[in-house]
Length: 363
View 1 (cartoon, rainbow, N blue to C red):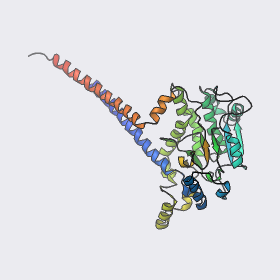
View 2 (cartoon, rainbow, N blue to C red):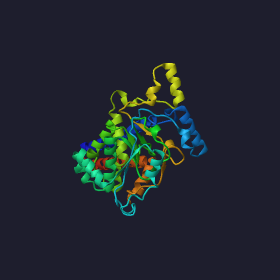
View 3 (tube, helix red, strand yellow):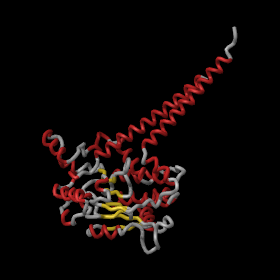
View 4 (cartoon, rainbow, N blue to C red):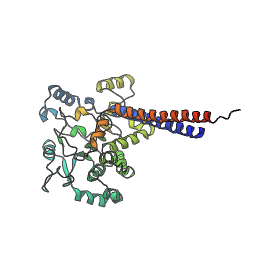
């Protein structure tokens, strides 16, 4: 009886430690993501000033006000879109072309006339994977939900060609050139992690390569459609791979950008200590990535506009999103779970002691 109680207590303690460990690792990673955010200081002074003025005035200035020369960009001037016909009934139009979104390819072409626009469909996607990454076809062909194929293609297209990937419900509001001078970037998600409806990277980026490989190792069936998609190919998958890379990052290499609140503080610190080069702040290591904060990824101003999407959301999404938007609820459930385990242990111990007393022989 004592051994059984000890085993149960050890298991309960292990569960509690695991929960604490997950929370701590998430906190550390989230802090790292904040440090990796693009700021106004990452753009030329005049450009940043105009960009900030547009925010203050809540209006979009003329494109000419943002004129700047960008040479030697790391990310190719290519925008990738994916449109699989009738992937979900009611979300797409006839075979003539995508009807969802709000003219995103046309808007991006207007603001970025020198960019290549690539529209992927189910046929071109499979041909591409068959020719270049045949090892992935067993996983790709056996995905249960069609949107998983769309998500998977995002990572392979970015890794192979480089460029910017955009969902059709995301549109350009001006030239994307200022965002091409980074090795890779992912948009901030709320409340944690990053999104995968808009991403960019240089071709053959090692982190994106890890994502293509991780699609196989993270191909789980989590029973519910939303959870399965979210964790195996969707935003949580993207965040998980970035977190794995961060936790395995050798010699702090992933911290190349350094901690800074804005350009002014970084420049001052560099001048005083002579230990940080401004070039390091503007040009992160080629194996690293940065985060596009919501201030550059919102409806208020700057680079992108959005239309509500979620075509892959199923009936289970309401409960999941309710918890995602309320982290305290997740902590409460975890605490209640651990408390219940300890309560059961205590109750069983009390009953065991009572039974022991009942059978004490009389002398």
